[in-house]
Length: 194
Length: 270
Image (cartoon, rainbow over all chains, first blue to last red; front, side, top):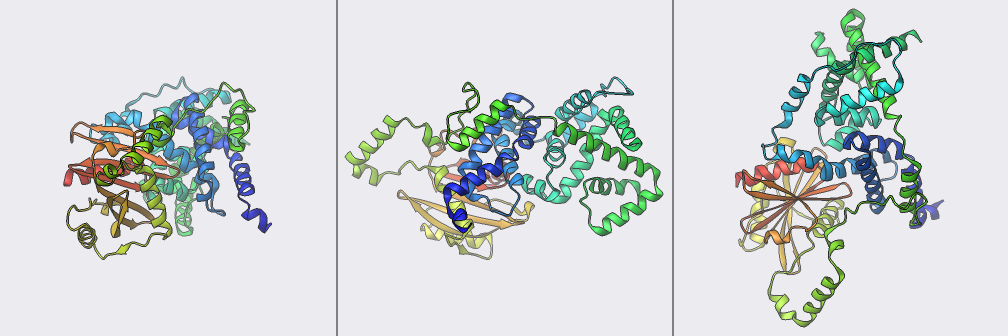
């Protein structure tokens, strides 16, 4: 056991095996961050390549899911987010509040409540609603709800206080709810009936 | 409790992220307030729906095979047509003949290279130094204030130049010390900021934008008429910019945008 812990090849192998267990969840995050499957695939591949290259920096006993998510998010931020942000950058990073206001102006395009909506329809609606959400509100949702990270882990990745994660989640869920209320009301009724 | 005050606590309750007293407080309120009870149920349902969407996306067998083969150094088990886009470091993009030529010139003209500033591998130097300082492999000179750090570092280069300093007080960080590093005959002043479990190193050296990593992402600030170069490795991010004859690089695990904001503020201030 002790030998295995100090054998670099076995350490790497074990790291690789453990990291692969998070593949689907990380892909989901990449997919919703980048909004394009081909970009998500590149982000995922690069995340795993970087993680393996730096696996010695990972501290055993800590959350590998959070560590991999941090690498993924950093890479996304540097290589994808800026493509959109350049405009804001030249505008003194004034997107902080504009994004939410603009999003709130977006009309509710839901066709109306349906008694038995299909799961795929809900997925489409949520995916589309998430796409329209400003990044500062979208990312906490992705990290906490889809990435299954704790507030503390999300706060560490976004380098902000835990309280900020909670307030942004609260705000973003309210924004999402406006878009999705017909669907989510039915879903919650279904839950209660069970 | 007012209903507007309950909103964030409802979110925390949905996520099971409340302290005991917060939980008791919101649960008491929910018993009395139907509107907030409804709001709680809505949010819980929404979270569940988002989680369902989150579990509905799966990695294709092909991509899984490619990543597995990358990890094991084996030929791809997936479709070979899917290859990873290259996001390489600058040094990896330098053609080998160019490296050979540089080596030849170094051998042929040692005097020339000894008397002129050498091109530095900036990413490698700053990222490695950052990690060494963080681990304690490089011991910095500690100081009580930013002014003391600045004075110490300026004196260490005979006052020929001073370190760039940044206002990181907004994120509860302050300069705690610094050190003079010397690489390839070039002096680099390293200022270390710490606070709020975040660690930032700032590098100042004499140079030009030719020192910027060739593969960095370039952001043009048309207002300040400055270029900012960003690069990263693993969990570390860095922002490079020039101010006069000084090169400044900020390195941290902070998101690049936060580093950029700090650098731009510093750049404007000076």
